[in-house]
Length: 193
Image (cartoon, rainbow, N blue to C red; front, side, top):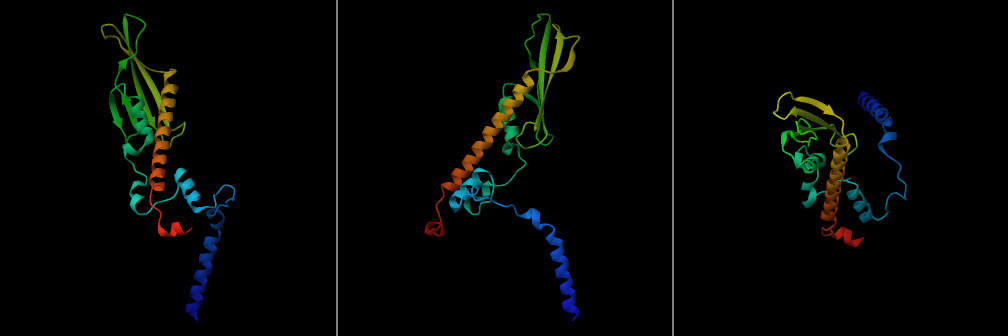
């Protein structure tokens, strides 16, 4: 008798524990938003980047912390390929260029620029990166240099170019994954439907 009583109490506690979670686990799906056909549903999920794959194509999925798999990082390297980098730390989340010629209007001084990009998140969104530009002005003989952080119309242009390129890279990756999945042979179960 105490054996049954003990398991009955555990069962009640378990039900009470999970009853509070049930409202947020399942989302109500509307028929007009979800395709009825299984193949259409699979195609939609792959295009949106959801779901998992088993078998031959499963090795291509997953989230990695490598610079080559991060679209923002790759896009930043592509956009700033005109200048060498003095620091490119993926784990630190920062890209810093070397000083490069900023085309001074005054013949008696030189103007150099340095671009710093900080990665705040791996997601492609407007607040994911922070672009800063520093200016170094020196007299023609490289003496009396002053370095200042400047606000320039170049900052938002660089940021926009990086975000556009990252979105393009991500879109190409999703279309490649969907082509890989949709190009596979169907199993006998799928053929019967």
